[in-house]
Length: 316
Length: 229
Image 1 (cartoon, rainbow over the protein chains, first blue to last red):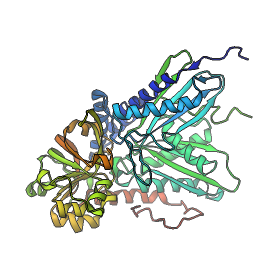
Image 2: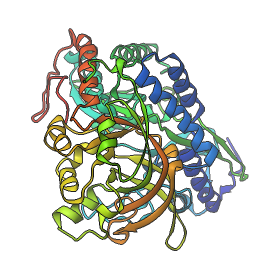
Image 3: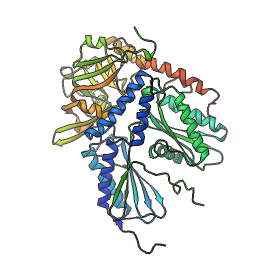
Image 4: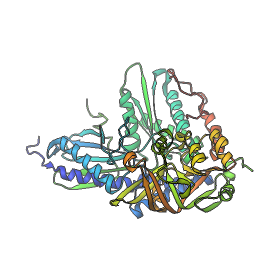
């Protein structure tokens, strides 16, 4: 049992970090995505698809060389906070949320990000990516820790996501059909801006499986496998099916439209098997920082969001 | 002559100046690569709503500027009051604008449309072919930094106050702006027309043995060869 409380993390530091995470996410492609797209570009034999993949690689470099956003649709910036059980924030978590909003508005002006966020009915845009329920901050907790991991994800996307209420009798074939249906819907004409990381959320409730699919696509790095061997096997199997679709970038003939498949599961109602699927485009914008109570900040590319505790593997 | 396979496309490169003349447009074939120099104006839902639903007078004489429009909006920084620097530009999906693009072509002389995902064969046949107009797809759809490099400045911006940065009409000065891929040529041939046929062939066998879901939803399509728009 600890006898001393951890020092409070300053809200002004969180604001600086929220700005910097937005800047890094918008400009620099994480290395896991860059190297896997580079591999695809080298392997692709179809002329059109190879042309597109090489331009994607060129674009990653142009963004970093010029320090400009890799894609002008800088999406909807959102945050994931993994909070150590012993972490404290000066001013409390209301101050953290205010700091994140201020950092996002500042990044919108200075990086710049495109001010995408509007009122859904009036379409009013305050040009700062801040508004009602936005940016969202999702929280998870980590035992035996006094830091906060803050991840910024700029999530584009009008296309590439779907939900289906399946039932136990639909089984794995039902999941495979749904997976192919979403590819048929959104890889044609390149609506998903593939190559895409495909996240699949199975089980839970409707909202939980949609959340898990999005987090699986956005917050796990390319090549990562679910620790459950059965789930990992399904990830491999779905990835192989992706290669056989014959679809490349933009919906042209090719093999590499599915960059990776990440599956997450949650316990669900005995009668059902809700499934959600989420495509994350090749312009993948994410950045993470670990903020320590002493004011040190460690920036990194892997969010490490799916911990054993987060999946509740270790909670009896 | 239309090639039957996307593997056979020559992908010839063209460097064009705006306004792009009928002769240059006529030379473009599906799958060709295009770079542009001159002026391009952006437009999406907000602009079309003003021009064609509210019937507002255009803020500028469009035909005197250019005949090229781009379905996009920029990531842009205001360096000093009224001084804008474009960092990146990326297209948004064009199928949503099928009602208004023909009006833009008929009323304002637009002949080159840049966007994402192309448009339906019906619009190509009915309007693009009739007017000798061409549709260019941006590449990959997320290479905004490269396109940002091709933007040399903002000539003017209209309806910024009412529509906001993301929907305003930006008139961009561009140089070597590209690459873009010819999706629909002046004869109405479509690159996606070929590509969709090819992908339907490779997808079909993967569906064998996979049943329809137990629970259906009204309003959905069930044939994977049907498009969702």
